[in-house]
Length: 306
Image 1 (tube, helix red, strand yellow):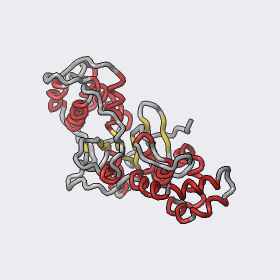
Image 2: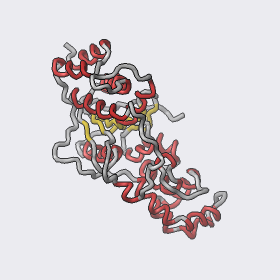
Image 3: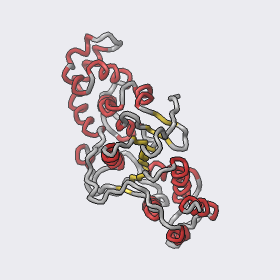
Image 4: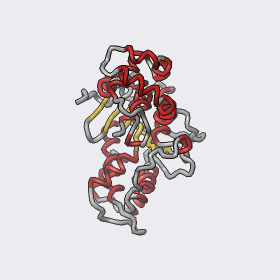
C-alpha cells in the first residue's frame, strides 16, 4: 500500500485537475437509477457527481480547481494512429450516456472551469492544463483513479484518488510502477495496456520492462541497446532480447499511444479559476436536476458562507 501524503502542501500554491468521467462512472455505480428530470433522463450519476464535487471543493479550500471531460469525437487522435485503440470497450449504459452532459452542465452552472477537446482525450487536456498551471508556479494535484496519469507528476505534484484516500507523490509513483513518472509511458509501450487495448511485447511484464528502462534511462535508450539486453544479469534476459527484437515496431507504435499530449489546442479563453455564482443563480439549475434538499443546502452554504 503506497504511503499517503497530504493532498495540499502550500496554501494558494496548488491547483487541482479533475479527471471527471471517472467520477461520473463511479457515481453511476454507487446508486441505482431513481429520479429523472423533466425530459426523462436519469439523474443518479448527476446527484453522485454533485456530491463528489462538493466534497472536493470543501476539502481543498481553493478556487484553483479545473475539470476535464471526455466528449464524443469524430476524429480521435489515437484512433488515427491505431484504429483498435479502446475499440474493445462497450458503450456506456443508455441511462448513463446523457448524464455526462448533465454533469458538465452542472459543473459549468456552478462556475467551475470545464475543458474538453473534440479530438484529444481528457488525459491530454489535463496534461495541457498542468503545463499551463506550472508556468504560473503552481504545484498540481490530479484527481483521478487512472494511474496512467501519474506520468505527469513533477516536483511537488500529487496523484489523488479522491474518495479512496490514496495519494501518491513522485517517489510513491516510482515505488508502485518501478520507474519514475517520466518513464511510465515508456514502460506501458513495452508491456502494453489491456485497459486501453494498446499492444505491447507478449511475455515481458512490468518488472523486466522497468529493469531495462532503469538500465538505459528511457525507451529510446532501450531500443538503441536491443542487442545488449541478452547480456544483462537478470533472469530471462536472452528471451527478453529476442522478444524486444521481434516486437520493436509494436513498441514504437505503442509509445505514440501511451504518452499524454501536453499541447492540446484549448482556445484563447482557458479558465483556471472557480468563479462562484450567487446562490440565486444556481437554484433553477439545482431544481432542474432535482438535487436533494440537503445537498442543495450544502451547496448554498459553500457558495455563500455568510
